[in-house]
Amino acid sequence: MRGERALEIGTGSGFFAACLAHLTGSVDSIEIHADLAAGAARAIGEQGISRISDRDQAMPFAREFDAAYEVVAITGALPAPEPRFERALVVGGRMFVVIGTAPVMEARLVTRTGEDSWLSETLFETRIRAARSAGRPFPFPVLNRARKAF
Image (cartoon, rainbow, N blue to C red; front, side, top):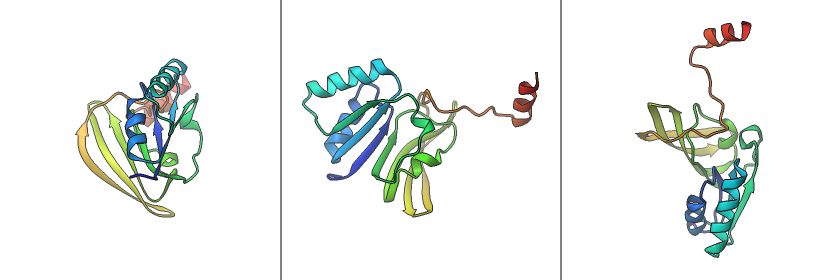
């Protein structure tokens, strides 16, 4: 909604950031690939959109975010829920995220309902590319420990 602050993880071409800017008040968009970030900044600038702060940031998955956003959109699939993005929401804020690994992924709407509570609703099943800097847990923890031993 107008006046809301949005966070997008994965700027890509900048198209989704532009859509979010049209729907909200301002967008902080983070991209780990410098070439994509530069291309998105150029495209967004050519469209005259000024409510987007685009950043080339190497490790969005390694940092904490302030609880300052009414909207969070993760544009690549995460293997598991990521609490740091949920904590980026203000109470009442919403996040769209795809959770899982191919072939089983779920699009979810996460709403922050209180200081320490969230509601996660599955919207539909889907399959999208994984977020490039998201960790990938090995599916069998015992084998993972064994691999480290060798």
